[in-house]
Amino acid sequence: MTKDSNLLFLQGIPPGARVAVAMSGGVDSSVAAALLVEAGYQVVGITLQLYDHGQMINKKGACCAGQDIYDARTVADRLGFPHYVLDYESVFRQSVINDFVDSYLQGETPVPCIRCNQRVKFRDLLTTAQDLGAEALVTGHYVQRMVNSNGVEMHRAVDRHRDQSYFLFTTTQQQLEYLRFPLGGMSKTVTREHARRFGLIVSEKPDSQDICFVPNGGYAAVVAKLHPGALDPGEIVDQQGTVLGQHQGIINFTVGQRRGLGIAAAEPLYVIRLEPEQKRVVVGPRQGLAQHSLTIKDVNWLVDWKNFQKGYECQVKIRSTHQPVAAVVYAIHEHQAKVDFHQPEYGVSFGQACVFYQQDHVLGGGWISRESYR
Image (cartoon, rainbow, N blue to C red; front, top):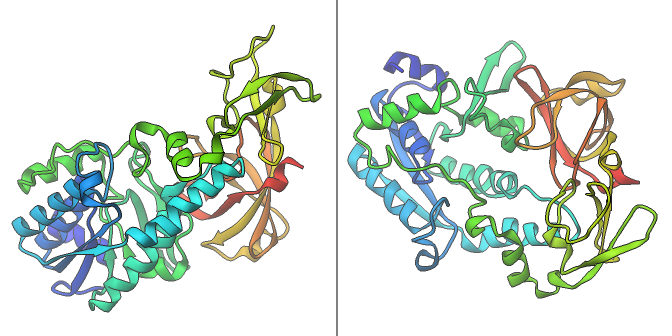
């Protein structure tokens, strides 16, 4: 990427202006900052401390831990711009971790990375950037921001394997006006090439893999530690209510799960649904997972929602790892929608996000509601 092409990502902001960069300590946000310095912008780095330094400094595959803060500061020092660390431990615990625990206790499968973007990074961090007099907040997310006659739009990243638009669907139109994403038009390979070119210490740093506050993917242990009752035993039943076995906590199960059920059966069984009030896990054949429609709550629209009142043909994505599939989205009202799939989907879990697309254009999204299973 050349200096001139980089200006496209800060359209409307003159070179030399102050911009804030959200720095996680990883290669992506570090390269975003370096590209802006190279393009002649006055960069200010901001890192959110979300954990206790002593507890998290050696945790691999996380972000916003002690080592990451050190890496972000080292990159800022090398590139010659100021770097601020903000203590957001209490905010993160209340807005993200506690929500994560509560969701699992309700039999949901939460997506805490989306909540973090919505309630911490793109709310409080954005306000801080504005307070510092920055003309824009820049992040290392792989998503594209497009400006056309309809205004500002969010689009999927060029590198489909890195696209993070699913995790950013809660971004409001007002926030999108202020945000910039320099990496949306490049691959991760190119990003690392830039990191080596700039001589950044994070050039070979591995990507974050797990949920940042869940060591080694062991979410059940985190939930149980914060809410010991989460491991209360209960029954595993079939769809007719026949008891097939016992479990040691519904938080150990997710909709669509096949392995590790701890019961013997003549045919493969899957977790069909979770009933937290009865502490019950319902299992059945794969066909029992088929979902023809969904109800979506707390919808965030990045286009005019009234266009969806009579039904809108588009593609929807119900998990971060899924490919978008054809569906018709009906707006029930501004904050609720119904999704009818062209073909049934399997393993849908409430608490997950459902994001709407028109090809690469992100139209909006919401949270899969419990009403979908009634």
